[in-house]
Length: 503
Image (cartoon, rainbow, N blue to C red; front, side, top):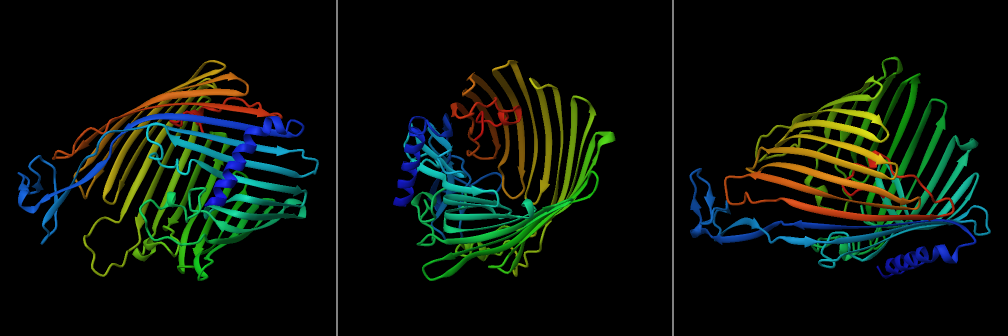
């Protein structure tokens, strides 16, 4: 943990000094700072003696103030959740991203990405702000036409997800790049975070986790020839203490151009540690240029993945299989229509004594349209419906992007989501209203901000049907400078993100 902090502070310091200390070299530096004001509330667990529970008109048990309670046979108390106190959050996050090259050694490059965050209202309370300084990625790279090596804090992206580690990666190219191979290894990071699994920040509840950082090794072999490309992957993680296996998987992806405008793609992975087939998918896509239409059909299998040290694997998670189809058409030069549908079903859990019989299949569908009057005026609307085991949802959202002047982009959106829950009485209905603005102060500086209001209603027959409404304000500034660092404003699709921008 101490090593990670030192690396993070060194990276932040180096990024801040880069424009001055490296003026003779080529570099790019981007500073992204954003702040958000949030008012929110949660649940608070409470209880009453069994004798104080009263029976409601529907036969259920309630507190005297009207909260539904859960009473366990033979217990002395009944539990329930009451609304928690309203809380204010003011998270501030700054991300520094720098790349430096031209250091006198051809092919040598330095790269760093670090994040500094805190909650100005209650330091340490907002998720992801501890520790305050985090090194997301940072490495030294030496690249030649046929090979390259990197060393430092790295991330490997594949169908296995994002594997973070402190170590090294080597990559080689053969046959003019038609065949490539790579290998990597080091001390692993926890999933979804730039922190080691031994950090208290990724284990707030004190659950069982490995006492040492796992060792990660892996590699891939990829090819790209006329009409076909693919990749074979392997990754293994072990606990260095007792030398216990943590995870081991093998997988691959392939894409074939069957004939002109017809593409077949797919992939699969196998969990060697559990001895179970993992996730898999296959898609056949057909483009029909004469009709300005594209069609895709396919299927997929998804099975949750857990490392061996996790207790969740003991619950024998089952996979679900799905078949889907989609079509995208452009009947008019400025209008795009799209539709998608999917049928899915879960495998038999093989439970010896199932607690209840529920549906194990469902379906989902969606319709959408985009009207692009010009690059400065875009209107989008989408409708979705999902009818699945235990729950259902219907949603609609629309947005308008308008750039009245070259340096100013405006976006307004409205969305509604209705969610029906089969196994509990807590149907939810929420309206979301958002407005965002994005302005280029100059070529290397961009200012953005906006407001979002959540109007939520929970249909419950008890006192827990309180207001969950929220108002969120956000603002940010992005600076980019260095050798050729000027960049145009982000496209409208990025501006649809509520935070007003993206990394």
